[in-house]
Image 1: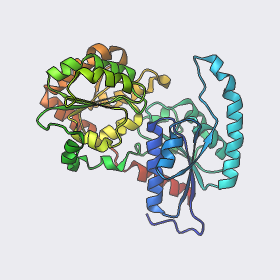
Image 2 (image 1 turned 135 degrees about the vertical axis):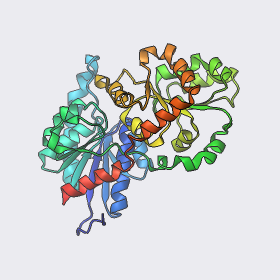
Image 3 (image 1 turned 120 degrees about the horizontal axis):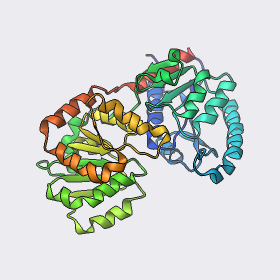
Length: 372
């Protein structure tokens, strides 16, 4: 599509965040808009004290923060400030929209997404929801009736949204993941990996995954005995503990990282992957096309990570280990996979069939269509 030819620059607000699973798709959409129209003006709206307030400016975009917080179903005392902060956020959203005058508001999920889209809909601004998961969250379900378009990554989302508004686009992923086969040599050098040995990449998200981390820590002896190299992203909460665990082990067998900036190289060097089952992560894993063992987080709304994982497992594209069984089953499943060449090839082929590498451009197609 050609660049936008209107007199005034296209103005888009992208709202949401909280985790990398919301932030990275949001940034991908922003970049896709600017590839199409270099004059487009993009403003992000996030939640105070969440990851987006750091990650979005680092990517070169302006962001405004809201005081909004999540509603805690289990901890009622924490909800005492929920409604005051929500009302303040709604007032601020109205001011942001009146000042910025967006042509479109895009919500990617997270605390800030709800108030901004709700306000935009009442001010008659077109809205687009980008739902990453196979199970829609409460906020997106409430916003769906007045949304103009809902971009999804999974089939059968008409269970949650008006079917006529749904477009299956997939989830946007980082572009640097799309050509990892050409980066194999660079990845070996970057991580100082022995190409003669099998390598497992362990990722639990930017904050970490306690069960996965504890399962790896408890089985370091076995991993080393099997001569499997480990690239281990712990997340920030488990990093110091993992460093202490590794004092007694050879550094070249197990590498520990709080956060891996070059995930393209990490994926390129891995023979197989252990991961949580966030929607954005699964979309990236489909692009990467490596065999994966998924350990869905139980600490998410409506157990949606298990639903995400089952969408792959049902197509023989991944292995599922339940979080409560990970300490006893995860490493045995890893060893079984390491010894079965045919199974690894089969899983890699099947998961790559599910990839949607141009999701960001498809979403931008919908944005332009709605605006025009």
